[in-house]
Length: 344
Ligand SMILES: [Fe+2]
Ligand SMILES: [Fe+2]
Image (cartoon, rainbow, N blue to C red; front, side, top):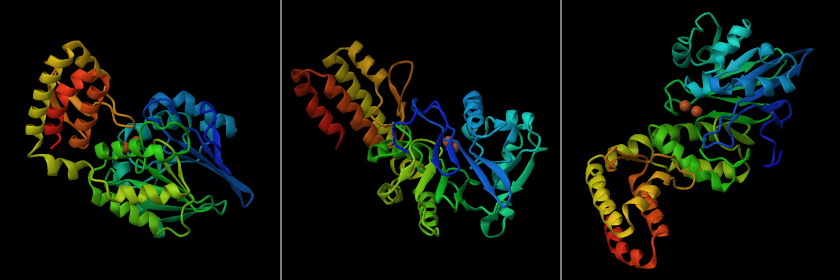
């Protein structure tokens, strides 16, 4: 499996495991995976993180290309948590296939079942002994709950035969350029976690659980972005353990944020005077730091900054750099002292 796959087709990422996701060319891809089990003269299929309603056609086509009968023949769907990008297709799948079983934590299912799914055969992770499940085919699955990564009831699923750990949103990223992550994916992973993960503590706990797995995973397969393999596993686990996210950022900068927003608006006034209003507005409109989540800087209708998400220091720094890149030498000279002051 290289990084130049045709993402319009299902891709076998390991024996019997297919990527059937979508949107890899857009900024937030969805990775769904189909696991086909064969053994003990029987077979079964598991769909991991099925995907949003909008991916139904693509999912159905990709699953049909590798599993006879397609979505009609899925025995089991696993869902990491209840977000619409994970569970959106479930009501349609259930309407087609009344034999569908869904496996999730009870905290997740309580919410998902409200999508008209209360009569689905639900199998609770919470009740599985040692969080391990042995299938009739002899295959073993392990469930690893990751509370608050990013939802209370989130759980990863570990395929003990392929040694692929499906991590849900944890370690997912925006701006994936292919199916396999490279070091360049880090910027997108970082931005995604700073917005969606509630605290570093929750992520540290998840990392601890990943490191304790026996045997160690060969690949981490998140629901967004690239699959993490080889040396990148340890590198990303190390980095994510140290990353401030969500509340870590909000609580540390909360008191300073209004002053930072006011300061940035003053700087924007000066930049407009120096570079011209039209040019500044265009840069602001197009501003999206590489690998970063769009809309890090929220503009009001009056053109003034209203909010800054993610790490505000990094967001401001990236914006000022964007102005510098578009300024003439003379304009740079005028703006640099003020920018330096802003970043103090
Ligand atoms: Fe999510
Ligand atoms: Fe997600």
